[in-house]
Length: 377
Image (cartoon, rainbow, N blue to C red; front, side, top):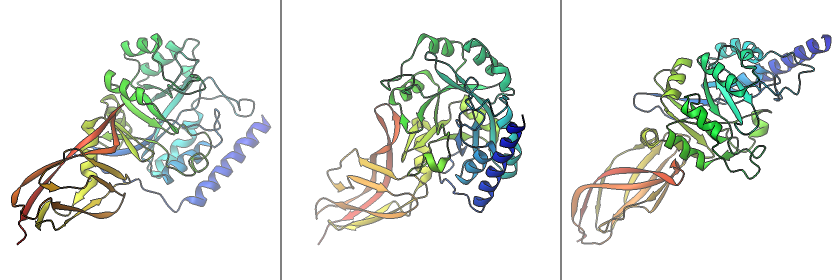
């Protein structure tokens, strides 16, 4: 017991000083709100020393604040505790230790745990629970039912994880049908860490489940994501609160930002794109085949890549546009012939190559321009 207490104190001190050494800055994630909703940046899957993680709960909280998150869930394993000889078994401990710092930083800490079973059914995160210790059950069905009884939401973790699916291919089993038909599952991880599962995105759309993307971080974020940004779930909430996040997940108002791409339902990705992009003017005026410059501003952290879908015989719009995050750019519009004489509205359709709305589907957006071209004399 003395060794356990000493280790606990040392971990707290290390986490405290690590946090305070970085506490002067926060890297904001620039993903705009959409009409009617606040866009919250969330990570619902992370681990600490209380299961197989390498950090103390307060470190995980401080890290999330520095990374620009609005909410995080610490979801330590119920059934897997490699440090249990040194850390007392209390499945609520990480939440209890972290909640005061989260309040101080204005970060929403969601109470959660990971129900860790063989495949099938696999691993599940239960969030918005009230007592993780009550999830200790022999039967995985009873554990998930207990989480739901507490008001929790359950999602299926990393369905294609090679630790359980050696070929990396997600499979839907009878056990998942049981959970789905009994309304015991709210969503599935389409993205986990560096892995994206296109088939699972299709499942979420087909079965009307929340689209979830998380880091599943065990070490420090800076170690696991040295050259990239952690994947996050974008939650379109009516308010910035735990209740607002829960309501959004229940109503499937989620998307994912990962690897420079956004994944989600067209219903939310289209307004997200249009909230991110601002045109200085949509009026195009030129003479003959002279270029007209159109200024566009990208107010988000997403590099939007646009590919022209509808080609016009009269006016040439760019075949490909890359709208770099946080920048303004000019693209050129011109007539195809010197004798062109038009004065009308053009609706131009672009596929947003990195806005994924299905396993093999990308978001199409319509850009409207008022085009006035006079013949060259």
